[in-house]
Length: 138
Image (tube, rainbow, N blue to C red; front, top):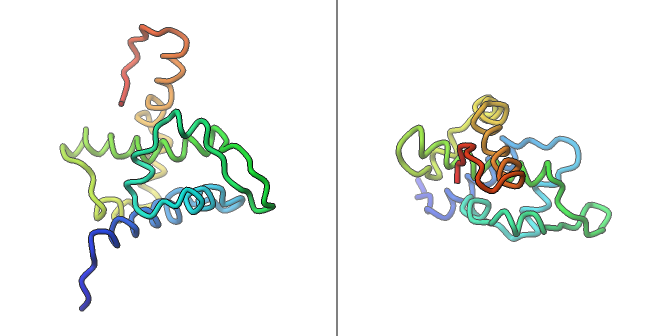
C-alpha cells in the first residue's frame, strides 16, 4: 500500500474543502480562483490576508479579469474561520485529516451557525467603531 505524503494530504484537504464543502454548483468561481492563485494545499487559503483577499481578482470562464465578490471572499474567510473554530473547540490546530473528515452537513451547520456570523460581523463592527467590543475571532 503506497504511503500518502503530508503534502498530498494537504492537497487533498484543499480539494475536499473546495469541491465537497463549498460546493459551487453554478459559477465555479472558487475552484477557478484557487487554481489561478496556484494554491496547492489547505494552508494557502489559511494564509491569505483579508487585505489581499479584498483586492483579489480572477479570470472568469469568459476570460475577463474580475474582482472576487464579497460573497466569494466570505467563502475563503470561512476556511480561516473554521480553522479558528476548530482550535477553540478541539483545543489544537486543525490538520489535513481533520479537514478531510468534515462532511457537507458539518460545513453547512458551521456556515449558517453563530460562529461564522460573528466572524463576518467583526469587520463591520470594527469599521463602524474602532473601539468596538464585539468578540473578534482573529
